[in-house]
Image 1 (tube, rainbow, N blue to C red):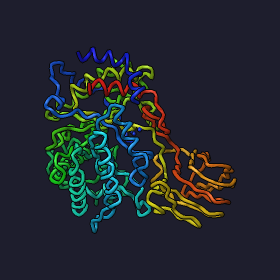
Image 2: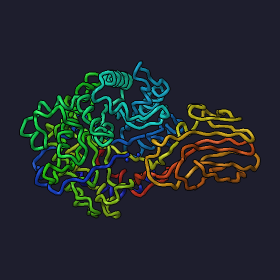
Image 3: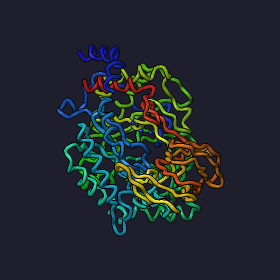
Image 4: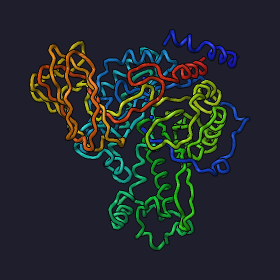
Length: 561
């Protein structure tokens, strides 16, 4: 009966969803070792479904929600289109959303511990609105990147310090508790997870320290040397460390033979952090690192390490992963047929179950296509077979997982601006001869003649290489005027004759400050400055149907039906 339903969906999906008819950071998988087939083993054809819907739980079909912005500035944007967005998500066959909760924006201060109540208010609004459309809510907590008070310093500092600083740990656990207490008060709250991605900066700690003396200092400071004392003497020798010289051990760099020990140390950290966090956020899961890391041993031979120690997610009832089509391939530009990809998907998922005590798998980022710069050589499906993969992957997903999520539901621009829609009033902006206007609960900025608005752009906001920028904004004017748009040292003047969306393209190497100065009175809103658009192929930047939305609807219908 199920396969009969699938045929009906395939024949009628476009018509049906045409009638009832938006988000990937993006850390992408590292190359899988070619030897993985021998190391993991094949698919167990006899394995019964581990889908928790068999036990009465609902299979989660999730869309990560960023509204009209992206995860960096979503919580300081306006929720003007929240209701319509969630209605569309539900009509596309999703039964849940994922909300990404940046640690610093929600807990700006750790000493003393302080919370951003405006962000929590928006969180409550989002969960409440989701419930109206029968959408459950998952939360990804601890997200690394956000723009909140980023002029005060690098946001990654707390992610480094949490490895060894007890005060940072206490603040983190308080953050976990407050988030759980907030979210669990809603009946449509489904759970939460952390992810290895947000703490992975620690894997590069050795390379970030200027001198070997600093690397030795940190190895003692964070407890790495003490951890080495617990490692078998023979294992230490294999990595070029003598047990009597552990006091001289340093944080390794990627090229060092003892890098495997550092990876193992970090795995222990992940296990400990998750286990302790679960005391404050019950059933908290973790998106585990299923990619294999490469290092060279003391003989210069390439080796791989699998992070399977983390796979069971301690006391969580499920394991969270990111899954990309590129996993399990050499990533040398391969093009894959959909049947090959379906087989490999099952193979990868089955391999995880061998190490996670058979717990259900939740794929929070199901990446079937990708345009992220730097990963052009990743294996990918033939473009004309993406739909076939999506329409036919349902059996595999239901056999091995309890749900999946789409990261890029709607394409998003990598906007460099904080508070780009003036939802937080003047916060983040320097305004001369201007004021916040509110119309129908929507904020905008009214600038008088010869007025100016500007914002500093810390370099850490620029996540993508490239000097070609697009600046777009909505403008209202009653009389024609000129607007001078500046980014760094480059200025472009545009004529504004009527209310419109203005788009300016310019090239600059140092976009440290953005400013907009007008000769006449205007009203502006929804400003974006970006040099990259992340594509998910479901909906484009403007909310129009993308190339795979019909296939995703069919996939969702295959599972929910």
